[in-house]
Length: 449
Ligand code: NAI
Image (cartoon, rainbow, N blue to C red; front, side, top):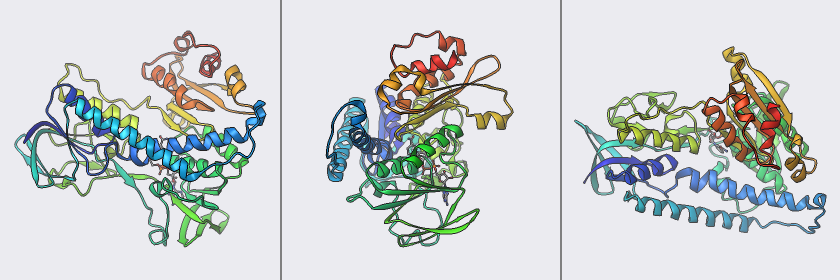
């Protein structure tokens, strides 16, 4: 069985590549050992956003009186929250299956193993069969990194996977790592009444996000009772006891559950990658701007490259790779400079383009235009006592370099910023666009004055 394109891994990178290649008439085969949709759909983006929405509803209902609405005895049912999450996942996984069959993609539900490359032909084994392909796209994703902390391996420590399958609410939770996963779960469990502590090695949570935005979010969650221990390392875990070392000494936190969220690592083992001998760097597969690896005919997209571990980056990379494979006359090189990043806490925070920290580090001059979210009428109408920020960073010629938001619905608004930055727009060009009134999006026009 010989195919034009073979893809290993059916997450956002893999299923996008398969759909694009199949729809363009290339014979395409997709190997997935677990469920289609990958981590994003089955145990990442979609299930977390589903349960976070339940937590947000619970928060809203508890605070309804501020809006003149009575809601007494507000309660939640963790079992039903989790059951709904599974229903959402099932529905979307079925959607991907349909997408594959509509694009004529052959889906093999089995673990694939690369056998090697002979001339221009790549051989892949799965089940009892051998498959050949002219092009191979590696989309094997990433896995949770468990840091070498004494006791962590043997402790019944959660990763995001187990946290998403919680059957009971823990009375207390220690989160190791105040990154995106750590903060989204801190938000969920804090909303539903768990006593949450976050231990973060760096001196601010959410590295990579705008520091001021991260600090605002930390202040908000501190107000809600989350205990933050920044600049602290976890040095040991013993059952429910977490030993922490900070600048002022060591201390112990007690948690009924512990969540390890210190990062994810590209998956490079277990599928015969070594037979290709391709170049890797910092634990990820090296690729060029068209997602080509160092081996002719082999591409890599998504978390496996270790570049930007986001589902929407994976989708863009897959589109780039397939456009190159299809030999489009002027394939567009993958660009990373305007990729939006969102943390789905409540309030959400989001950013696109450069942060002040990066611009300072690179010595690039910039000016800041910043307004509180309360300058938006719609925001005030819908966020009683809510605070937030819209910060825009401009180059000397007023080209938009970065936009950073705190406040709902930052996850939706950031798309506008990402498009503007990606298209190289200047402040005046964005400000001259017509934003519907009243919407929170007007805050960008407001910030630009
Ligand atoms: P992360 O890299 O975002 O955060 C890990 C955090 O752990 C960092 O702040 C780091 O300083 C800290 N840390 C590392 N070692 C530590 C230690 N020994 N003690 C205390 N703190 C320590 O990784 P995370 O949150 O696990 O997420 C993994 C990937 O998944 C990320 O690339 C993220 O972008 C992606 N993701 C994206 C989401 C989104 O877009 N909303 C949601 C969830 C995950």
